[in-house]
Structure formats: C-alpha cells, structure tokens
Length: 258
Image (tube, rainbow, N blue to C red):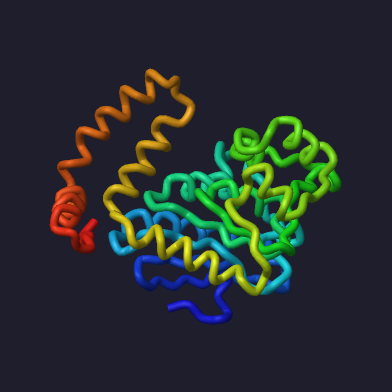
C-alpha cells in the first residue's frame, strides 16, 4: 500500500492504474530507486488483467519530471554492464500491454522527456514546459533521442537538442508531443475523461492492438499488412470479440472479460 512518503504512488480503480512520481521537492527528478520502482510497476501492470489503462503523472504543480537527480549520482554508468537502468525502464514502459496516458502538469525535461516518449497519449497543462537541456551541462539526450527523434519534426528536434531550450505546451501540441492542452485546474478532469473512454472498451482488443502496432512499427506497408491480416484473423477468436458482436446485435452494452 502506498503512502505519502513513497517516491512512487500507486493506485488502481475501475481498470485505471495510476503511477504518480512523488518527489515534488526535487521536481520529481529520477533517482535509482524511482527508476527501479517504475520499471517494476510497468512490468507488473502488463501481467495484471485488471489493468486497462495506465496514467503516468506526478505530484505538485511545478514539474512532471525534471530529468535525472544529478546530485544523487543517477545515470552513473557501470561500464561492465551493456545496459543502463534508465534505458531498461524505458523498455519496460514501451512493452506495457495497455495504453499509457501522460499527465504533464509542469516541467518535463531531459529524462522526463523519455517518460513522455513512452506514453501512447498525453495531456498537458497550459503551464507545462518541455525540453532537453542536456547540452547546457555538457551532456546530450542520447537515450531520450532514441525514442523522440521519430516523434518530432526533424528540424524542430535538432533545434531542441542543440539549443537546449524549452518549448511551451501549445508548441508541444502543434508538434504532436501531446494530444491536448488544458488549463491547470482542468488537467485531472481531462485525463480522467480520456482514461475512462479507454477503460470502457475491450481490454482484449486493446492489448492485442497495442501489440500489433508495436510489432509493425518500422515495417514497410506490405510487411505490416502481412502481420495485420494474421492478427485480424485471430481477433474473432477472443471472448471479447464474441461478446462485443453479441452485444451489438442485442443492442446492449457489452460485458468485457478481457
């Protein structure tokens, strides 16, 4: 059970799993413990049939995540290991079998942009600021770039990386980094509304659909069609598909089992 002292608050209700970064005094910066907790939470969620959607957010009003906690030695590499804990967390987030909604309440910087990148959708407060300022301290957003460079127009991405300057929420919306921008006092309402719309749909269809989209990312159209036609043939075999079609015929709300 989570408490207010936890660095990651976890709650689950009506199919919605909320993962909330809870280091507001450090602008929700990532330390090794928080990275480990997030990795475990993403992995556990993928095997929990009760979870239909994840909301990734943060406490406080100033920051979603300001990146690495540099004072704590986070991101110090063990050169005997080929993988880092931060990259493994991003991998775990990308492998989640349910959609992830980012609740961007304030500053989203550096490693925080990696968290945004693993979200399938995101809603930002009008006060949010996003950026990759690593070059200002002699670093570069290497791991974040691996995910973000395919999501942002190339010249905009280059400008953000090489200047280290932030963009506002409206610019993030224009560049496709977030789905919606709302006033700060409407952020929770907007996130809850989106999460509720997703949770109301077939869990089986969404899980298989997310798997199919991830599998076909980067394939040619013909290759993607080969994968998708096989997936389409499997969908009617699920209990949710049979229930959905029966409910449609009987003009009633479906009762999903996932």
